[in-house]
Length: 302
Image 1 (cartoon, rainbow, N blue to C red):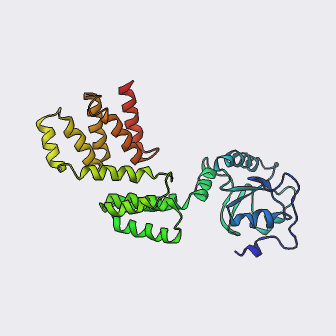
Image 2 (cartoon, one colour):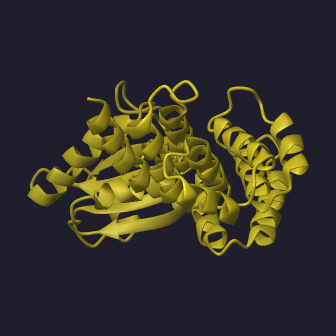
């Protein structure tokens, strides 16, 4: 739908009354629809909530959304259309009942929700609308990486970088995949192009450190034989951990770390605990495995 056709006919854009526009949550009327919804939607998505005090579910929806908006730090806006005051916009956008939501992005209707929603529906909508392009691509990549189809993942990321060369998130993901593929020199080149302090830059850096260290170690089968011959061989434990990380066997790696921690905290300056923290960085915040082993480590240490 064209932005020029989105607004109701017969109304000119006029400045809104003080307090009604310019913020993250604002009142919408036919007078400020073009300036505060259509034009602002060119930068961030705008949720239009059609509501009225006389319809309790819609008043509840208004409260839920207003409570949610601060967490999104201006990455989405909430426009409130009180149909008890003016039904022009509701009629123009074919709203059939309350509450109803129309999502305006780039001057067009991009999505809609009609009627009362289940718990979490508004948060899910906002999460989807505000997901960064890097995070969105990461979600698409996960299935490809699970299948270890690194060439396809690399091609997707290189195309994304060509389209958004200043997006450091894409470069972080590319460096990480290159390490997993084993093309370490290429990964170093990409890492060098990532701004210091860029979000999650430490992840491919950490993975590259593990990969470099693994180059100096025997293969995993030989290390397992060493450990079988001497269960207290902590050097073998640590080497198995490093090799397991490179192979993507994180649970096995964390088990080896726990063995080191429980056997000798002083071994290589507490390398068992330190290595667990490094693996947690690779897994990322909220990963189930990282959460479980954080608890195990905490329980043992305390």
